[in-house]
Image (cartoon, rainbow, N blue to C red):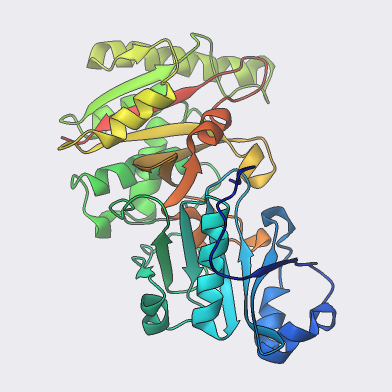
Length: 365
């Protein structure tokens, strides 16, 4: 998230675009002077183009005293330091100044090379390590750090990465219940993930009513409400004929189940103000499982569930149970992820024959 009216920074810095694929020989001489070859090799090992990679450099000594490789998902309100080289405290100050000038609400820092002491000295707090996942794909650095530049931040939940391409709905529901104290963090594993997905799935996706019904069945003491601004079957635009019809039958059955279980299905969208009010409610542990399109953040228009669990000025903080390692993402990108209110509202409108917005509000009690 950027603004046409940036706040002037008191910290001098320079921003240089990063040309992926050019190789270490194409880096500026100032960078090659302060960065070890193995660091530059790792920076260039993946194509970070979708995240607008850039170098934020701190001047000093007639050149660069320090530099950081900075990326971020499109449509979001954070900046990520992949690595800082040279005078690390100066690099951190430069990135924080850059983030404040762009009115970003958060800076995160992948713990590839920075020590906890250096991160703390720069005003960054350690992130909780992610829960063990059910996938063998590399999850990134073992440590990460966060500094909020707007508001006081939010309480940090556990992070768990979905182990399939289709179990995001189940994982967001489980993460919500972990944060509510209904589920123990150590019990969130692949078996729990796939068991809840099996109860909620419309094969293979989880549509809003089916997900809400599955949550209520699993945790009867939790209050569940579904918001879906259509009565037509959803998430079926890629199917036709019998493949579409039998899934539509299951969605009608889920609506009947919701009626029997007393799960309200509101035939309208959950507005941005209502979403904020839900997760900000004092003394409550309410979460919103929000259906979004990944078109903005990842470049492909597929439906995906994220967990909305907190707010800071101008942004909603979400947990995304999936991240794109092919674009250089790690769990640090998907954890405590701030998305500007307007951006999140736009992401929540799914295209197709029926344009739809869907959400499940869960109150863990």
